Amino acid sequence: MAQPNVQSLKCVVTGDGAVGKTCLLISYTTNAFPGEYIPTVFDNYTTSLMVDGKPISLGLWDTAGQEDYDRLRPLSYPQTDVFLLCFSLINPASFDNVRSKWYPEIDHHAPNIPIILVGTKLDLKEEYDRREDAEKNGDRHAFENASKEVKELKEKKRQRPIEFRDGLACAREIGAYKYLVCSALTQSNLKGVFDEAIRAVLNPRPPPKAKKSKCTVL
Image (cartoon, rainbow, N blue to C red; front, side, top):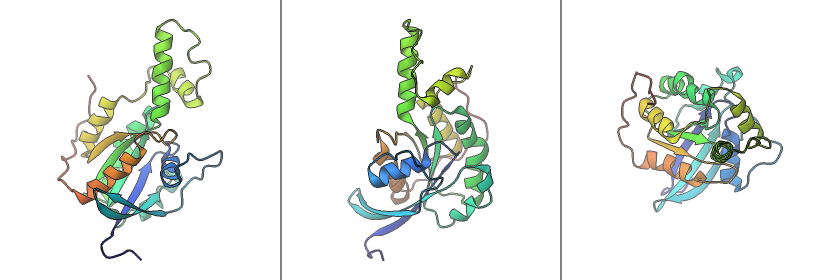
């Protein structure tokens, strides 16, 4: 039972399957990246922490992004205080689905709840950029030993990793409280994602209204 001065918050993590939602939660709560076995959905977990001097009991709820769970998933949404809407920085389709699927779903079932837009797998995005730079400098074998997802993206013509400006434009389009990128593997900015999720509840601000038009990258 939470102490009277401890604020309890519910944070639901959503987004396409295989974008790293479960790894994000496991890495954050255990301080270690999961090994070979990664469950489809992470068991609900509550952690106690301090943010800006305030004691918080943070309830973390994972969701399955696959279509098979489309009817069950919204059952997790009632009483949510903040959403982490995730996509993979090296999976453009997961980014497109933020607008076409995930934001409409959240807005329908839990309107006016703050959203943090999260670009995951920053380590793989950085790997892609390093290998691409090497290729531009004449290394024809730059992608030979690349990580599986990096190699898969490279093989898709006309598709590239999601740049920060694109994520920022999307966040503005859907009226997200903030846009952040992180890596569950290296834990780069991982704590920052959850701290900002808490701040979105503690320091609410009227989010910019979601724009109806699609954001265009010039």
